[in-house]
Length: 314
Image 1 (cartoon, rainbow, N blue to C red):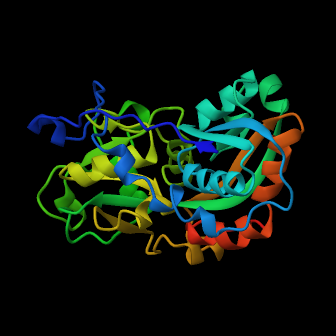
Image 2: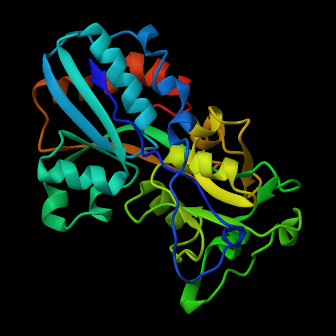
């Protein structure tokens, strides 16, 4: 069997003052329906995927990236459907959490959007083995009330998001300044452990620090999707799989004139993408090794991965 712990459930409550994105004191508010924003394919549809060529009994846990979670979860379900004496538990928590837990031996697999070297000290990172299992992309999304904005350049996103050199507020704080309605911009940010946050900061913001201010800080792609859908003026970044399952709740924005799609990510024209990593502490064995082999098999690479809007690595 496979088990997936419930995502953090809480109340998304904010006053009118929360609809202002600025640098200063930080606040956070959990999502009221993070689970509802999770891609449907992460909990169903995996039964149509062929199982592994051979089964290994046992129990393992994978934790970390919520951007990769729909894929790992669905692959785990397909594996255990074919191998009922195996248990694969898939947890989120963010890339930094997954890397820390696998390094400490608390889990067998650490899922990450970034390299271990970017999150862990050298001795700990060196002890981990990197298994690149997919290519994944993220899309900038806004609340559906933000009309008239279909594309943002990297420079515009930096002006909306970044506060470099001790800057007190972003350069752009209202949607009217980029062709949208007269409405304050609300940044929905992720914790420091988030691989999504690290990738966006590196690829789009050129490493500049974000303006935290009164932005909401959410701990998963699902929670961010829900928060953007419920917060007037909100903007954030979510994985392709989450956007495809929530297209009615949020609006996607092109980046530098290129739409976020698997095809554009694959041909290199869309830049907000990165490799999806599954780390093990040393070379895997037993069920962990079998599951890693399964992640690279044709049923996962050529059937499941495209169905969930990732790109295969082979």
